[in-house]
Length: 293
Image 1: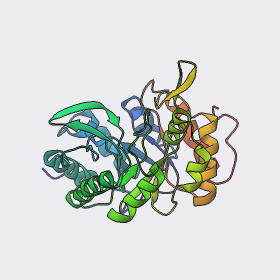
Image 2: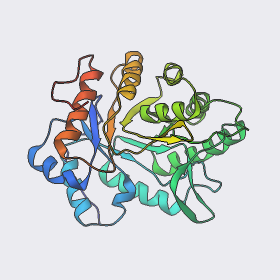
Image 3: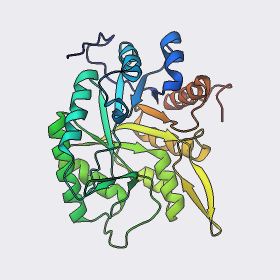
Image 4: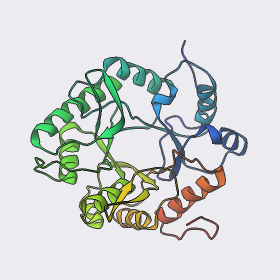
């Protein structure tokens, strides 16, 4: 059955504004109030079924807002090629909703048919680069669209890595034509966990391939007297991450920016206020007085 969606924009591009992840807790707020927000993002794996409330709500939201899809299941760094059945389901969903942006992670999460609930890191070597590039090209061909690849949050490093993450991502973009998704919270989390300079990472990150930015909150733990940050997506964006974001958009100008909040999902006004702060910062202004800090 073919689904036709009436859209307000013929091509529905994602504007250089702030967006948020679309959550079931907010369906009513969004559909009844039509907030002035740039766009919404969904995890396509949550919409693999043929119907039901998720599709009913997403079809209605899609009538009024541009859409981005952020995949979590392709396992582009895995040993095996991307799963063909999964790619086919993703393409069917993308054809149905026509997202303007489609992103995935620089990570792996499957092995010999087993699926792990984590996005696991990779060694940054020439061999890994060739391997991931092959998978990105295969996925882009199957989906018929350009992917944005996200920098990960990591909790360990590989001794065999012979290039840094920024160089790896830049080379991946050059080889495959993919774009990049800069997750600023992931930069900060990894920098603190591994003891490198987050500002230096941001300054070195290539601007031209970046099609989307993510901002999120992180948890702070103590591991044997040393800080350990976890990319939790369960709270407001921390001030240090806001400042890194300001630093990058000072170079790039406005870029579509998502507030990720996937656990302990707050009431709509709290999430909306975070998006308003990002949009104000994107345009060189200050956060509104009622935006939570």
